[in-house]
Image (cartoon, rainbow, N blue to C red; front, side):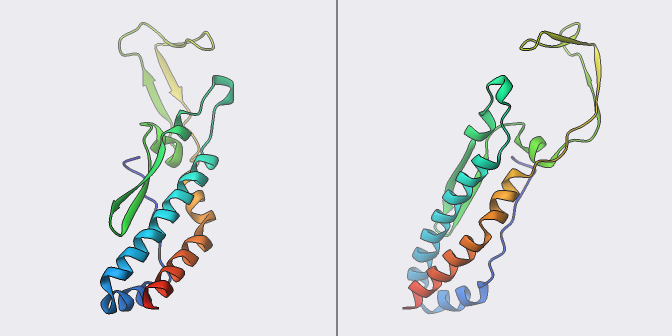
Length: 152
């Protein structure tokens, strides 16, 4: 999901900074461990929050959600499906035109729409943001515990 970014604010950032100055290696290790646990938890929650079209045997969006560490003290949860940003952020009304065929059609439902469709747009479904919001107390606790472990 290249255009949708979900940011997380860390409540005890000042404590982390001062602890990092005192023991940078230990704090980095503890923060890295916390971030790994957080992104795994957010990934799992995002998979549960992501919509699935059960009538069409969906689940591709859910299956495309992954998490990974991107550095020693950074990580990300990513939606690999190319349409994920449109589900998350929604779309405004738009026109869909035929490119290579004579008409637009849905083979699964045997529906034919014509050469031009005036799509009404889609409502945003911020499943990734909901996953982060739902885990906010867990995120805060993980960082608090990481700092506490690092300074002891």
